[in-house]
Image 1 (tube, rainbow, N blue to C red):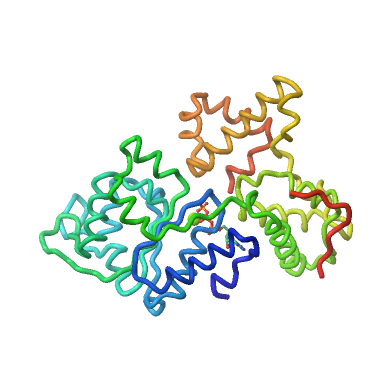
Image 2 (image 1 turned 45 degrees about the horizontal axis):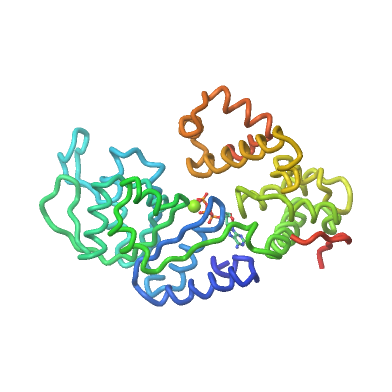
Length: 327
Ligand SMILES: Nc1ncnc2c1ncn2[C@@H]1O[C@H](COP(=O)(O)OP(=O)(O)OP(=O)(O)O)[C@@H](O)[C@H]1O
Ligand SMILES: [Mg+2]
């Protein structure tokens, strides 16, 4: 299935996103895709590539956050023989591999400043040198970048170059979290349920009204990925015809607004959950960084993750009165 067809959504915000995908796909300009973890940034990058003029070419992904800083330049731009100890032969980087196609720079916010300069030059002039190389190379590759960190904040902290941000973000697609997509969440929950029921061969008809309400009031910090995982889990766990809140196990739901007045303890809990979820998303589950950011020890962090039932995060609307069934 094509990536764009795979994407579920009928809310106005998502229709605007689909529209942007079709429009930017027609151009060769760089695209910046932003959004919280699990909102579909990679799927969108694929959708753009599949509809672009470079669709016959490769779509080469590179995750700038997952590669050690010392290796990233060579991974991205390649190196010449002898460029560093161990560089026994010349190597082409991902940028060259993406020739006549698309380079998908995931977690672009993790690029260190010297590489940001090199990327900016490529975007402006289409040229670069391999690590340790003198020869200037030219490659025709479209750049699509994605990030789930706030690049404006990174600019304020001098971690990200403003000129690169504007160059990358001429075409900017922002994916809203699913809690801002209205009925799309229910729609996705139904579609994922249908698929999982077929896959696990379980005769499940739909959701109880309580389950739908739980889906609506949960904050979905892990967005579509979390929704899809929770639905799959629910299908496996379900014993009845309809999925219940218990099958879904949305135990780390953020507290309702009225709870914030209930007690200091509830308010404290809500703030802690919010901050922890944000930090985990920002650091993509790297608990050492999360603990450092929140200024707690890893032991304390683990204890809180357990207490708030947030462990699952690391490893990986309107109320209704009737059950919702697969049509
Ligand atoms: N609108 C959608 N409809 C259906 N499935 C979707 C939609 N958006 C995303 N998905 C699915 O959700 C999962 C997460 O999407 P994806 O990997 O693109 O998110 P991401 O924003 O890149 O996340 P991260 O920031 O964690 O890398 C994938 O399995 C993807 O296919
Ligand atoms: Mg991704």
